[in-house]
Image: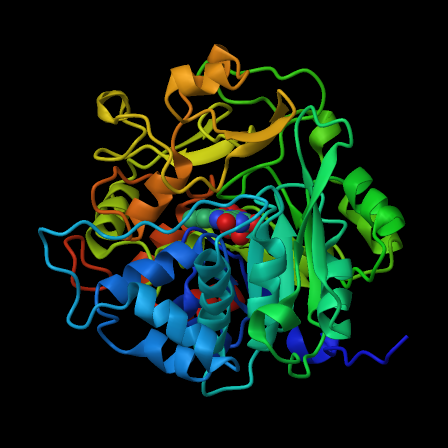
Length: 478
Ligand SMILES: Cc1cc2nc3c(=O)[nH]c(=O)nc-3n(C[C@H](O)[C@H](O)[C@H](O)COP(=O)(O)O)c2cc1C
């Protein structure tokens, strides 16, 4: 066994971790600002291939992505990406942007190149010019890009990988294979397949026509929502788990479903009960450090008192100046929060992942029934498609795609009701899909945003925001 160089967990962790927020809410600018202000900045690695293709087609106005790509260790591949997507001066308004190919078990070469280069660029830009820690976040549920995404992030020397929305037991194995120069593989779940999993494989040395540079193993933090899952992961994971993010059901984004039979409140939100309560004290006995997430922006001291090493916060950072949410949408959401009219709905049906998903109730977004109904169902990004074994073939289906297509692929009509195209909605929220209706997710506790706005004397209609540095100072002040 060759000797791996490992990141030192003490050097690259901090009491405040800014949670990964996809798609593009925690881009490189936010992650870098947090890292510079003394926290751990986390880039969201979800769908960054689309974000890179979008920025390049808009002309990469400030030149950041071209600068990052110029430092990519395999210039021929970076050039392929630029040739496929970069448009000098930006695409004209009348023209339609080029879509990127969809994921499959045999992904197109340009999709592989774009995914590796995008993960590399986001991490590289977040790390540029300082030595503070930068993590990357992925959703386990979106399995096919993993080996390519992680390789890209490790080529840019990412400090940590944080992963939730599933059981990410195989991720340390991917680190090992990357460091050993092996062919990379990942078991992707295929519904109804006799073998349950089908492997996606990638030989990076053949692809790049040369050996990999030396890399350092990042630390690995799975996100868990129960003691049972943490214990299970520690037992079944073939590699090292360096720590846990322990996330409650009030956190923004996707939540773990309640245990047992799903029950809904009168508004139609999942009811969480005693069995879903996390026993924080028991985490100490596991002997690995943990950070608490889900309405902990105002609870750093409480978390430390519970034996945690700190907190992971998302919502408070989603409304900072540096977050990727489009300026006007952010201002509208902040006005709602300021007027005490913001509320959050935990939808058990909106996300094609099947996980509950939190949505800010806000006009002009997909949560409005008329807007939801006005959208022609289509699946053009495809990240949440479920691979399914049907008639001796692997097909891909998504409960937000046209209903007839979903049913044709063996899907159940009931799953399509109220199901949203989360991929397109979230991309629209960060301005990467102008023809789509945005969708805004936040955690249940918005009071931290309100208090940061008041402390920073935010104007209601637009000119002043608070920054990541303000948010860090606020968290530390309580
Ligand atoms: C806008 C937004 C997007 C998020 N997206 C993701 C994501 O892509 N992956 C993930 O693991 N967690 C995601 N989260 C959860 C955060 O990483 C973090 O754990 C959570 O926000 C903590 O709870 P808080 O919102 O109460 O601070 C998201 C949260 C928000 C607010």
